[in-house]
Image (tube, rainbow, N blue to C red):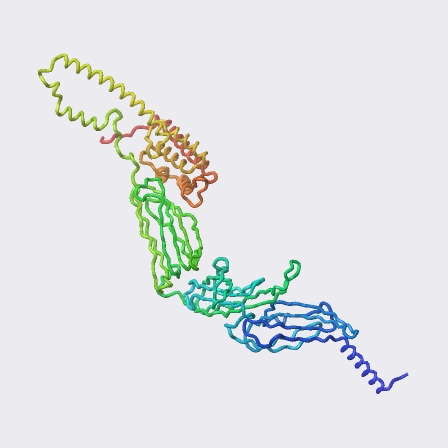
Length: 595
């Protein structure tokens, strides 16, 4: 059975009409609307999308909206009702949109449940003084200057004024920008302010901006977003009704000037409202003895600069003084709304030899941003007087008689005794005087021996307790001094090890003028010993000093010291034995001097 062509065409038309009818029956009715088509910059627009004959979740693609809008909130609701015995269902989406640019534009078409909505035209007006979605909320920003130098401090303040109660989830956009360092100055401030007879709550944030490149710096717009409760729900387990609110403040354009040509090229660029350098010493600079130390603290303070921007100070080379520098300390504080950077450097000055040591002055150039001129902060030079220790070159008085007694005896010898020189003096008086003089002579001799014995005991005690540079050279004391050194090295206190080393070196080399570790290292003429002595001084005064008193020997330094000095003593003993062994076989010179 065959069909003719008109019949086939009629059948195809019927099928097409049937499919079109089924598609229209299955298609959902979608309506879109907005609450207003004209809004001031900083305001919001509510987009409503309603899907009929559908209940529950309906797929919706809002990605196209994010290109020109911030989506503040998204809500959905479903409704089911009966009208004239017919069930009607619907799903509604409400989107609160925040326009990102000014001018005429479209809310783009989006896909909802497989269907494409129509775009909606809107107009965003530029009027910053009305840049808020609610008349009871207002956002202000303040800038300290419209023109600054590169790396100069720029203060930026954001203030939110509000009369509404119950603001929830407050959120501000950050002043983030390229080629600038932004620091928030402490936590936000909250206070109240009376404006035109009306009391406002104020939420304030302060920032310091440091431009890192000359040219134009664009500070972006600041946008506030939050929610406001209407107070309709007062029950604990019931969600409060909230509405989104926004506020807006326009950004700024700042001109960043280059570093002035008059500023020294090889010095750190320091633009500041005020910069000063100060110092303090731990002791008297005029009474320092070899081996003693002074602590020096130098503080650099700059208003409007972070501490990380302040330059480090280098320890100078000073003759007669060893200098050890500790790691610097930096601190940033906020004073009267300004960043104040502080850099603290500490140095230890250890006297090495008597004389006058001159500490050079410190000069720090900086640019005064208040006057627009180059200035220099100066720390004057200082002189350290290193004096000879007491008793190092003065004669030792005789133990039995004082200088006053010597002067009195000399005066008596020159003037004579009138009683003895008189011819009329009786003999018994002479005999009595001779007897008294004999008794006095015996008494003085006994006192002299007592004082002499006591002086020997005191000298022995002083040898063990007095500073190294004050001990006398004594026979057979080198071994005792080395035993003391071994005991002290095991305890590990750097200051006591230093004194024990000097005490042993004075006895070993029989040198009364040896009072420092540098002098000991010079006499030894050994690179290892010189390095060990430097490590001992570094443990006392350097940056890595440890322990409660700050001078504990690190690691195995004490053992290395003992091993090296044991080798030195053993080598010296072998050399003396070899010299004594070969002495009988050494021939005398063929010709004597002068022959």
